[in-house]
Image (cartoon, rainbow, N blue to C red; front, side, top):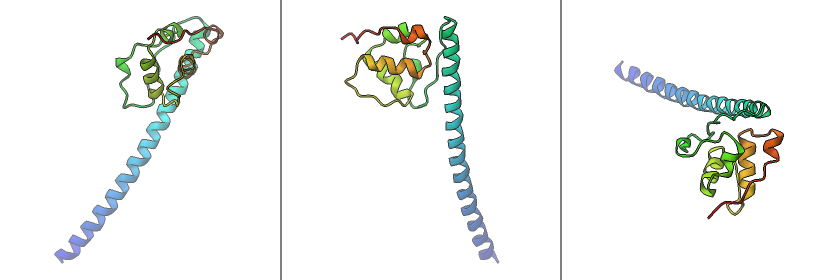
Length: 132
C-alpha cells in the first residue's frame, strides 16, 4: 500500500513541477509584455511632454540586468548630447537596441528615438560627436 502512495506522490510531484514550470514561463512572458507596454506608454508620454516643451521622464530599461541608476538621467536631447560613448551604449543595451560600436552621432540619435524624444525640436537637434 505504501508503494502505491509513493508512486502516486511521485506522479503528483512531477505533474506539479511541470505545471509550476509552465506557469513560470507564462508569467515571464506576461511580465515581458507588460514591460513593453509600459515602455511604449512612457515613450508616447515623453513625446506628448516634449510637444509641450516639458522635460521628458525617465524610461525604465527593458533589460532589468543593467543598472540604470548608475547612468545620468535623460530628460532632454541636451542630456543625451552630454553622455559619453560608453554611457550611450549602456543606455542602448538597456533598451535592447542593436548598434554598431563604431557609430558616433547615430548612437545619440537612436537613443533619442527609443526614449520618445520625438518632438520637432528634438528631431532637429544637432548632436555633437563623443568627446575623447
